[in-house]
Image (cartoon, rainbow, N blue to C red; front, top):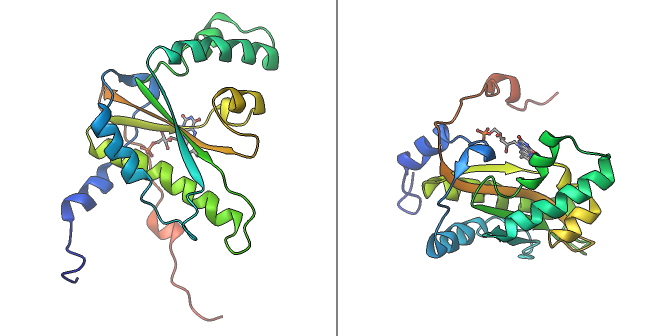
Amino acid sequence: MSSHTPARPEVLEFLLSRRSHPAVSLTAPGPDAPTLEKILTAAARVPDHGKLAPWRFVLYQGDARARIGLRLAEMAEARFGPLDEARRQQELTRFTRAPLVVGVFSRAAVHPKIPVWEQELSAGAVCMTLVTAATAAGFGVQWVSEWIAFDADAIAFLGGQPDEKVAGFVHIGTASQPPFERPRPVLADITSTWTEA
Ligand SMILES: Cc1cc2nc3c(=O)[nH]c(=O)nc-3n(C[C@H](O)[C@H](O)[C@H](O)COP(=O)(O)O)c2cc1C
């Protein structure tokens, strides 16, 4: 340990207990404007080879969320055929589960020095830091993709450009219930020390 990198045991404990909350369990309020600015600023502070900022945010909040649902229900019907009532409700409420949804769009593009893969990894880091920062600010959070992240028409409707991919839709709100725990990988199964063959 060095005075340049003081230990932050509380941060480590936080990371060891962090859990997502199902989007459907998130209620109002979401973060206020200054808190959201902090959360997004933290999320944009990720390793980014070449300083390309190959990602951006789109915010979905307020009344726009219900209007999005109406259009997504139409799009889902066009793509999947007639929707039963449960499925229609799922589409209508896709963006109203939480008071705030942050779309993280990857705009990775071929670059002379920085591989596209590294730019896309950076977008994943943005999503995870967004999850972590919003949780640290006291909110329940879930990073989801769902069919809309892989449908060109839905991406365009949600503000994506033709050359962009959805890294995630991060739902943020007030947790209405405690999080469930889930099994985690056994560290020994996913960790080894390299030795020369
Ligand atoms: C790229 C990505 C996309 C995901 N998409 C979904 C999704 O569409 N629906 C879903 O229930 N969980 C999705 N998840 C999983 C949740 O974000 C989360 O991992 C899960 O709720 C367990 O949460 P926790 O391990 O953070 O506690 C996705 C995760 C990632 C990394």
